[in-house]
Amino acid sequence: MRRVHLLLAMSALVLFSACAKKPSAPTSGEAPTGGKKKLRAAMVTDIAGIGDRSFNESAWRGLQRAQKELGAEVRFLESAKLPDYEQNLRLLAQQKYDVVIAVGFAMEDALKKVAPQFPQVIFAIVDGNAPDLPNCVSLKFREHEGSFLVGALAGAMTKTNVVGFVGGMEIPLIKKFEAGYRAGVMTTNPKAKVLVGYTGNWTDSAKGKELALSQFERGADIVYHASGQCGLGVIEAAKARGKGHFAIGVDSDQDYIAPGFVLTSMIKSVDNAVFEVCKSVQEGTFQPGTRDLGIKENGVGLSPMRYTKQLVPQQVLDKIETLRQMIAEGKLKVPQSEEELKAFQPPALP
Image (cartoon, rainbow, N blue to C red; front, side, top):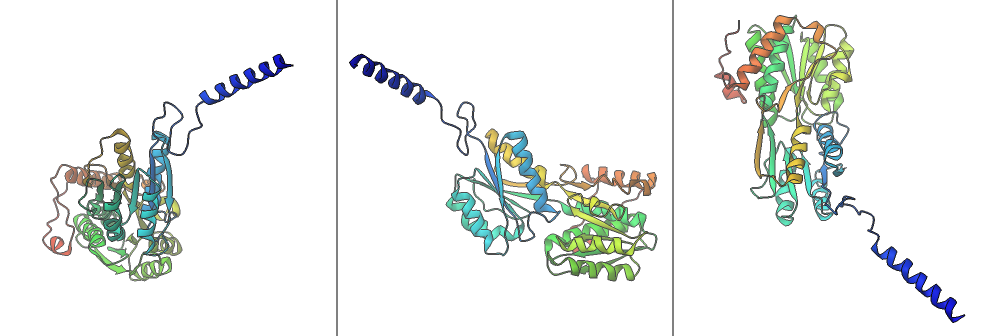
């Protein structure tokens, strides 16, 4: 009997030893091989939310790419009101994410409060000024350059010599879009008139539709928007007016929202910028400061025009490409304010 007890005890000891040597399952933030730390990256949306079909959605695509290509763990928090910005940034930092993306200039103040308290977290802000700290980077875009190209296209394509612009808040950032657009129109069609309106917010699509319909009624046949979710109303207005009326989308490729009624979209490659930040953190090459992304860096540009390219004459496409190259090579400086627009001299085109 004592021999049986001894054998049972020895078997239990062997079993215990085998279990103790088995590696534990990976926890959040750990890769299953070699104990290498998995990148954890998250973002906070502005009040337009993740489904804005604009730059929040684009930023999320950047994180999803990091998940696919870098094996990162990713998530987002949506903000319903302005006070949510600081709370959401702080929550993600407390949860020890390696990278936290603040989407939108409106988070500048919140980031200035949170970032100094979490020096081990890398913070990036889209379209805003990051604090001058070693763990912060600003992701900025030369939107006026991309807006110039869509303006040049609108000027060349209008049948009425009247085009429109609908902005969100009348702030310097959106005035960059307006100035670039008007300069582009002026370059390809000096006779064209540009109607301008602002919704005063980023979320009222009904207001965007109302402004766009008003511009269409006043003779515009193409309306460009830089107005967040309000722009969905601009696109609705173009579709409602029917054949011969177009919207121009912004930030993301919005052509698909109303195929055939969105002439093109001015794309800001927020997704690529967000991915590159994640990649630099993963590889240990992160640099603080400011990323300034324009046509030369492929930070802004036109959509592929999947549903409308056949409507654009080749000579117009050639002009747009010539202008793109001139900007990329530094031969053409695009105005980004009302003052610069007044002094702008359109380049001669073949």
